[in-house]
Length: 282
Image 1 (tube, one colour):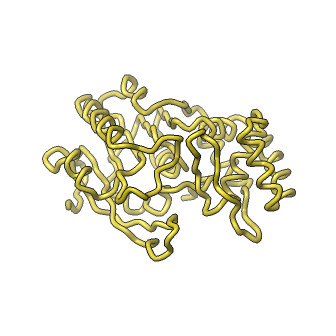
Image 2 (image 1 turned 90 degrees about the vertical axis):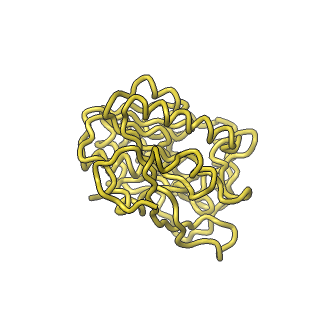
């Protein structure tokens, strides 16, 4: 199966799909993913299960506008991306970043600039400062693949008739019904205070983790099927106890760290509230 992710995204689940797949429900008719990011899980589930209803969302406005552009205007987007690819250089990168932060780009051109910055910045890292400005430096790439036409066209096809919303994750709770499947990939509870968490102008705090746990309990009471990823921390273990949730250990590679010695395979939790499949519980 081809997973047409068109962005690089910290914490993306593309490499973890083979470990997540055995723990997915047997059937998915209605699917929600409110922390969309790079969208690997959505593209996988859309192809494997063909849900009748899909709603994907994220609080990142630029990200969501780009998904809508991919869905609605893929060929026009490709034309714009060819311009950015042709002019790619370190000087051009900083010109585009400056214009992007000054909100000089609009519509399809803005989405093309977003993809260009994502695919040419350092480590493909999406990070903003306290003013909400994209502040990642230019990456040192000789010939970056800024876009792939086939990937964009396949992504567009899979996004047809999908609800794409820019909203806080809590706003989906009134739409979720019994047996709906909800996959959550929030900012992880950090292993240490310096861990990456700047997807938005404010970090994902302890208070945010408590709010997320309350949200999960609401979905659980509605008898939705919930699966989500997080670090293995004391806080996560306390918020999602074994008596209420299955906690499966999976192993993923981490490549975004200023210290190269701290990159590599680490363990994390895959947490769920349903018991259709047999699995190894920690």
